[in-house]
Length: 252
Image (tube, rainbow, N blue to C red):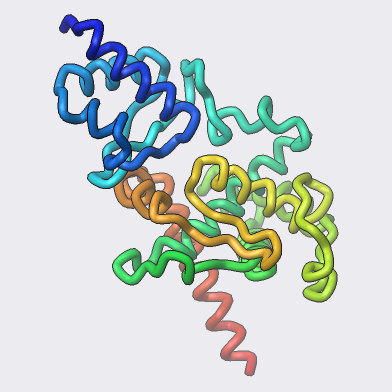
């Protein structure tokens, strides 16, 4: 399909704006202009495809999604190791993925009653849940069978996580958040900054809480819910935490 110069200019402006902002409202003038012209929107999709990306239209916003391989615009999720030199060990990257999944599993429960600015999770809560999940998985990983079944290096992740410094509640309140793999909170902050860089969450550093944005729910609804691996791990995390909570109640 051939495009006019005006259509290519509209598509290019919007594409490079998406590269910078990651998510753009359909009410944005550049997005509205492009969407009104089928040729310009097709040109946008073509530019994205050639760059190793794709465009997701949620009906409220346009999201720029980067393909894991072959993209000249790889983002935080697709090139963690090269982008974040602070994360030196592969196991730390695996733990960050678990941290993000635990957070998403907590948020991905009842989007119909999502309250922007009210739904949130503290760093301490997230650390406790990650600890509970990794400990439970470690205990189930006899002879590495659980790791093999779920394609997760449970032994390495649990040992590294258990070795990381964990602030107490009073220390966490006093400390400023810093990124890095030297502590559990630091590793959590690393993972949450990845989501914030994608404009999916807002981090209140004074409260040390993570607030999901509406863009996160759109991403879950229109992308993650179609990914079998995400659905399987989300269900595994949910059942693990539910079982842990049941054991805690039984103990009392």
